[in-house]
Length: 222
Image (cartoon, rainbow, N blue to C red):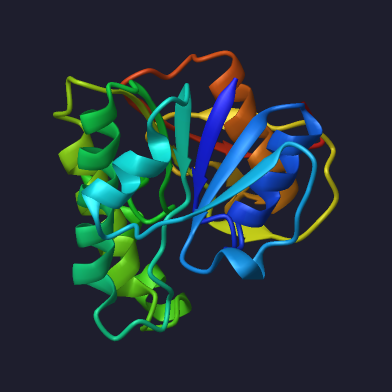
């Protein structure tokens, strides 16, 4: 399978690139500066702009699927607007090529903690998350809401758990749906390496077409 990866230099994206290459995918990464990416077997680097649907379409054409870990950067002063602008451009660019499979990495903020209540709207979220990240969490929630009405793509939206951190790749995880996964009375977490495993597993064996899901590390009882 030939896969385009957008956002390969980010916290999640670098692990997605590693996981895809380890599994033998032909991976094309779209980046602003091609010289900053080290050559690797199975990896093609193309110059592109995630804010331009035409640029995205040029990178995506003749591929089988797209994985987007796009993020303007948590310190972007226009994070909300740029997150929405880039997300929209990526969707339009993929649609223009006729490629149907799109897997989007979102945030945990849009997961539900109670009926009708999303994590991003809680006092705990505002108290424990740096203020600069909140606009991105809200933008990711809006991007998901827009994606839900998309009928032209076989899209999947993947939300990490509340805690996503560096750690070992175990290859094990548990799957959830729209609700924040918990570990006892605390929000659950996962290593970013295992999160990448779950994303690529979904790409290989789709189980959440036109749906959102989340994952977390397995508990000791599982």
